[in-house]
Length: 412
Image (tube, rainbow, N blue to C red; front, side, top):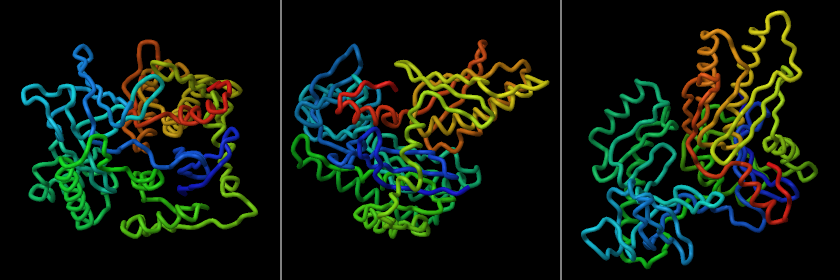
């Protein structure tokens, strides 16, 4: 499999948008919209602020914390364990109006929902994440058992007691020295931020997350990555400096595309691939199709035989179509950044063995997704239940933001 990261601007519904894309075997697998020409590519997601408690709502078991004047964020109280206070108005209650504390943006504003923040601050490196409230040692479940045991042993005496540590999947083949060096650096950065926070004014930004394209590279597995290419000179130089400090990424060729006669977006057909990624219907090679419909509560996906020909053994044909659909559904979920509850209506299979095989196929297909996806079971109505962790706006929501600026009638 050939994988490339392509960073360029593309015309999407008459908007010039900066895209960071992962392309595998010439197919768009993952994409993030980093902004328009008039926007900054620096996202608020992951930023750490000195926030001020605006009010505590007991029946919601939540507080609203301002991170800027007139910008309240939702803070679930059940997750507040050991917050870092800058100014505290009461030593008895956990949180009261007027308290100032460090909070980190965990979720962007979505539709009518305010952004969500957390008091469990984290700093993320390529191999390691450190956290302030969850102080356990965690190791990615995607790593082999032997690798997990090795990291557990190595960190037994080196893990800082005041922080939690998570070893990421990217550390699978990393040098132990590089991982421990990153851990020490992140620990120093967190210590420095916490110590200086008490001298900062309300709404100060204590940590600004890295540009979206660097965060994308940080979260992309370097194994199998053939190239990083961009036609943006400033971004090229920033990526060059970032990769120089990360041995695995430094081995991946970085190229500045300079052919003005043929745009980089056209070379990888990004405009057309983005249109398909936002379309309701996805067509499969067999002639079958997938219909993807996000709703307020969940995403519903329907698999249809459409133009595929069943032949003499319909059940065998349905089994093949379902397997093809499962692989494409896994790609579409990742590409569209769908999250929450996902219900898939595959073509009905009569034999329970075939149903179990389909579940196994679906579970295997979602393993490539860096965002946790759980394939639960098949219901009595032959619907496959899945859930995917929410990590930001869906691709449709990201594009909708720019189309609404033009007053367009949105149909996706």
